[in-house]
Length: 178
Image (cartoon, rainbow, N blue to C red; front, side, top):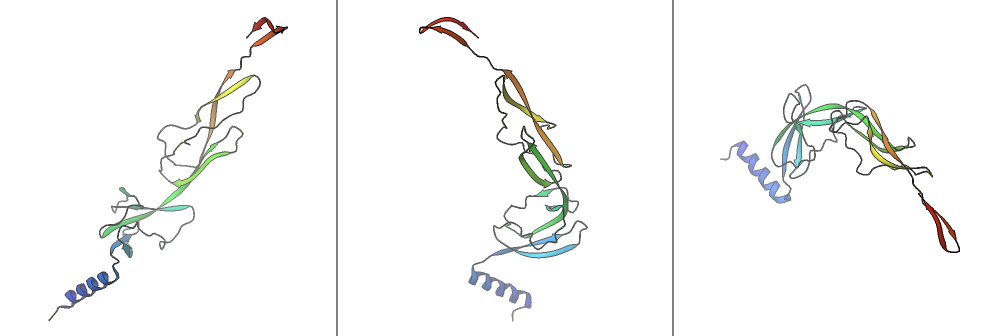
């Protein structure tokens, strides 16, 4: 005689082997510590958060602890039964502007996300008198995180253009000035 629990285990094993689709359970608890949902997650797939309730202006962040301190990367493949806690995190937008105040780069990210500067520097057109070189982003500090909506403007240094004038007479340089 097979006990009921053993019977269920055998059925689960047979079904799993028959379909060759393996899964792990992910237990999702809300920020108050209440079990929201138990999800059957495919092996080597990230957590599917599509069924969690959405909240305007917020993103969902996963944590490995009830105090919601240790962040869990939601792109991590699940390879074992896992307990996670989720919390709504306010979204903020940061912008890097061009010289003409048009948007060079814009991202909306959850609170506390490290602000990444653009990988390419903006440019400013030269004039007859000056050439401009990008220097830095006004208001940006290395390692800063998104804690509010913020905009950064480019700072350019200028250098005076130099020209060489040649006075030529019959293909002969009479005078040259810079």
